Image (cartoon, rainbow, N blue to C red):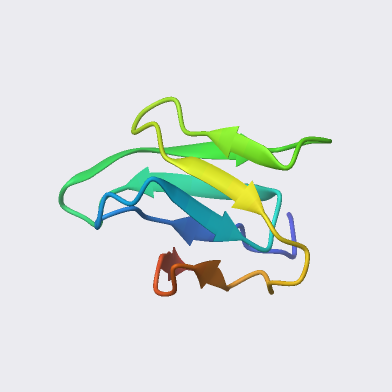
Length: 78
């Protein structure tokens, strides 16, 4: 069983891009009950990843913590 919890991010506001401090995360689309299937995304060696469901562009910033985002408030749970 894994010790770490994967952070879940949403894009309820419909912003073009969300900058986050992790490379492995879940995108849920909008906040429930308007969410899409919760999809695990892994940037690997890249610094950007597009969600295949909602087309949100996620960008990695190593200066942000695992629960931080720009714009703020996009974390749904950790």
